[in-house]
Image (cartoon, rainbow, N blue to C red; front, side, top):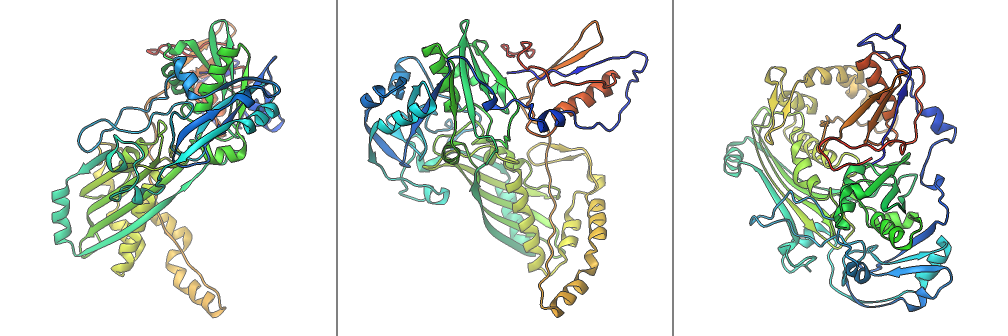
Length: 546
């Protein structure tokens, strides 16, 4: 992956270990004056363009592919289907083997090949790759490619996909369930519901969403000196490099990932995409730089999406509104061909925070990752945590209204209390501390919660409606796999930090500089954002990256 060098001038006379101060954002001047480096800022000699022919069908057999006329079109350099790629040793993009089906067998889903093979599984799946001298020539040639499809039955909603007799996305995934996890004690939860003074039930659907980054996905493959370099906007370049190695059955250090500025990521630009693999393949075959850039409509079809979870939940409470147990049954719509983050979000990340800030003595979760004939879902803006928090807050609010209790008071009664910390969750995570009741008290005071009835009455006299809402949100920080950092100090006192983490607007350049000044006692004089290709960076314990 590309490194992010930060160079800081060091003056021993003024260095103070542990000195911290507010720091003005260092990257803003560069970005606001048009000195950022985004995908369209790159230009390579002899570069050519890749365009994809995509499936218009949610589920169909590839009956015949005729690319003769496309190959003869002006400027065309190459046309490939998956059959040619497979014959040349190209494999698929693997997903992490973290989960199993209910019977203990491995997770089952269609392999994510760069181009569709024999069957298309969703609208927008790439079928043919065309490379031409210019993007317009490649687009014109794509219009000449002829693909004959034989329609097959399809299912696009998770609830319909698990119904008896639903069309199967993948034969090994019976019932369209690719994998399943279960947490907690079903028997004890059932007993708690039997003795509960009140039970609240809710069914929610977090609808499917799509990221709309200002900069659409784009990538360029360059093959030089026996090594392939992928210029792309990637939030996880180390993982992308390793996946390139898997696709081409090569060592990861044969690939280099260079990431400039990212014009919005939101989780959509994680992992490795078929387009990334295709430009790398084309660059090696043609000996020329090969570019691809998504149209906005392509990103709506073929960039992985987010959410799309169905939840059925029940909350058992005593007569004072204190929680006794929680039961959740989740269907996570993974789409047809999962990306690396598709399964982990509903099967693990959501359950990690499902009880959020509340003490819930007993839980039972059943989560099924469901295949449908749609584009995959994956990481997007919180990746499972918003869905879990939303579900819990809706349960708490509904229970308060049903029991005619103040919703703020029901939350207060169920918060994890300060004396309960460190608090271990049902999934084994530990909260180190918190004063949720104190935070709520400050919020209610600032919002004049107690004065709301009078304000509502005033609005009613004026013929207006007034409402209020309250919710509490929990986020966890830190994730695996982690990224290592190298720090280099030269003889002139310059400190350079090399890291594979990528900035997407959150100010990492500034944050890293603050860490350097805090830990090393180095004053900030000048911090340029250097060329990320100026040093090869190899994380310790890994096969090498830069």
